[in-house]
Length: 507
Image (cartoon, rainbow, N blue to C red; front, side):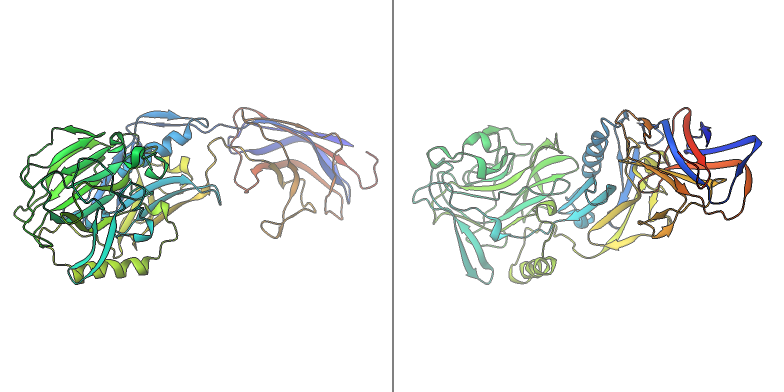
């Protein structure tokens, strides 16, 4: 029996040892791992001016967006904060206000670690701007909202259930799903606003109203988080924040020409450029009028849900073309063919004069690029750009980028493989993941959250050396692999102790 100690400080987990004297190996010898000790290098990354920019493109028309990440050091403990920062900063670059933004309407970007294969994945998902009737709740408040099928250009309009107009939110339509966080849009056109008391409140709430108690059958005013109020056509639009009337950015009288007139105003509450904006599209004006603009803070934890409160009487207040872009991540198996058809119907059946920008749902040119190599490597990418060629793009509607390597922020796995490369080869070992013969000396079922691996074998398992003739060696090379066969990165000195014995030698 012979004991061989291998040592290495190679950060790639390579053990290459040269001996001054021959190590004689008799035919049909056997070899076993006795012990293994090492420190696994914990991955950290510092985001600074050398790697703080993530560039991406949604379409050639919208051009290149550049998201600047927060300068910070990320460790195995706080690495989820890096993904959250990427989500916030990349989504904040998405806009939906003008002609060049049409491909971004309804888009949300989500950076995550795939649960299926533990690889970093960046998902660009465009939600269609459609009615989503099956998602609506119409009857939670005292007076149910009614959708009338209608016909022609007066198709699919909504009215509250009140006999008399009032300032109470007792006739409410809402969606229990949030809109896209990057460039989400909630939009409607006013069909009628002839109530002299109050007509409607249109906006977003930061609570899923399915979970809110409607005291006395009314939506609590505190849950009117961001909204445009159309009181009467005689007064300017108002801004309601947390249910309280707040000074608007711009003063604008409603332009309601007549019942179901194509020149009637559109109301829109949208997320754009990292802000929540209330907008009015008026047929007499070239651009939208901004009623309110608030920073969208805590994007990773705060969802925004669309709602309409009909305060006017049924015969006086109505709207149509109710269109939210419900986040794709609410509906990962959406029927896109069905959605395209509904979008086409909108254009065919409705004459729109006060025309807000319509979303583009065709394939466009995408890419994703990290500044420098350090962040790309940390996330598991071989190259900083995807696709790697600067002149190439991925032409698609929904863009998905996945790293080539498993994301392992702490460089640990459930097991470590000891593989011999020279000297103690060949071994009678086989690997199921590659379906090939491999020189695996041992699979060490040991891992530690602190990066320290100390493994001692009580009963060594000897592997046959497939040598029919005697031989002498002076060089032994081995390496350490994770269970996905990626190299272990070491910190400091690592030690492998190997036992070598003849074919019939007792242990």
